[in-house]
Image (cartoon, rainbow, N blue to C red; front, top):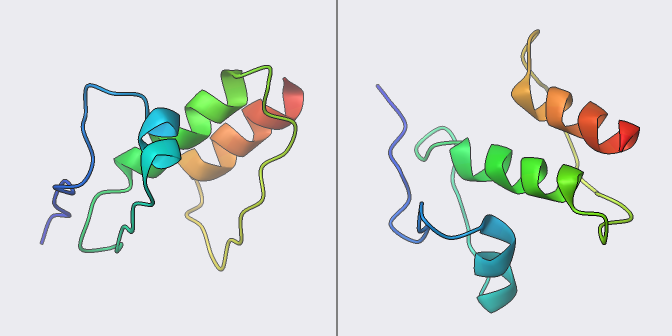
Length: 75
């Protein structure tokens, strides 16, 4: 089984712009985590972002989510 790309996410547009336009619901593991990673990456690099609030129930040992959150905290 491999997660699918969501039909609601445009790969060519920034995630923050897409979410500002409308809510997007993703269902992991059925849909890819790539949009979440892209969103965290954009937020980590955006000087206008002052906080990121997320609930993590469990993460992988080498988690890209944790990596992006650490990058955001450093920025």
